Length: 218
Image (tube, rainbow, N blue to C red; front, side, top):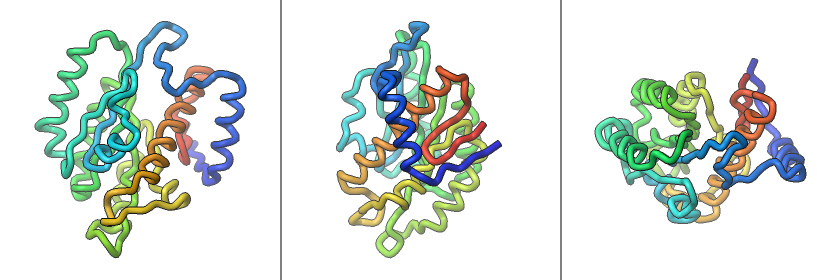
């Protein structure tokens, strides 16, 4: 069954209920069974930009592997090796969560990304962040092409966060058409963070499966 939640107010209401129950701690990585979780943001210039604004790489148990202008080829040849090195050097973690947001620089490689996600899901919990909107009249990458990519990649992802729809609903600003302003990066990070937090809470409390942002799958 697949249920689409189009009303952001609904998600906010759910979060308020959970917070009031003192059940959510966004930065807490110690679970009830003592497991320690590492979060890795993987991406391109947009992830770099978001890190410059909200400083994920300075947060406890959070890492960033991202490079400007990169895509699937870089991930296969370099980024994946950085991830392997990161895991090898941080054996204190017994659970890994990848927040994956590559693709806007090479939308034509969607089949390659399907294989990348499939491989990553074998070793960690993976949240694929939808390719987020551009400003068509400023940048050559058109939203229509992004939407097509997202439609193809979403069905193969265990966890897909539809931040594209949220930014379209909420509003966003990108002076050059591609890279967001500080306010948009902050909004994007908060949406991703809240979506993952809600999903992890529901998985832990109710053994629910894949609940995130605008998309609920079970």
